[in-house]
Amino acid sequence: MSMRVNTIVTHLRAEEAFALIEFLDQVREVLLRTYGDDVKAMLRGASQPALQQRELWAEDEEPF
Image (cartoon, rainbow, N blue to C red; front, side, top):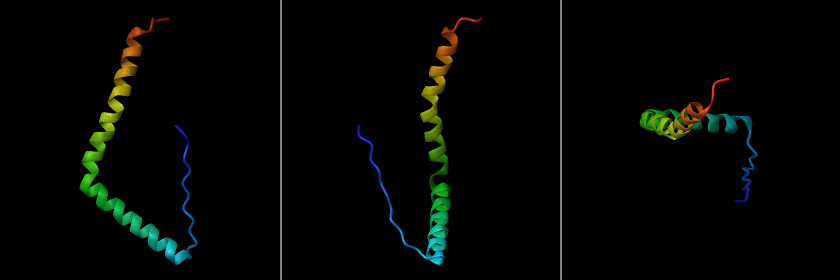
């Protein structure tokens, strides 16, 4: 797999940058309100195999 680098070139005035930040904040709020519970569940599910694997490793270890 090769690494890909993406860049965004912007030339914004401070007012334009502020408007863009405000817009992104609004999008974030709407997405969290709409999909927040689903995203949390997805993240819990994604971390579950790692937690289970750590538990298995802990069972295999010998106490000192």
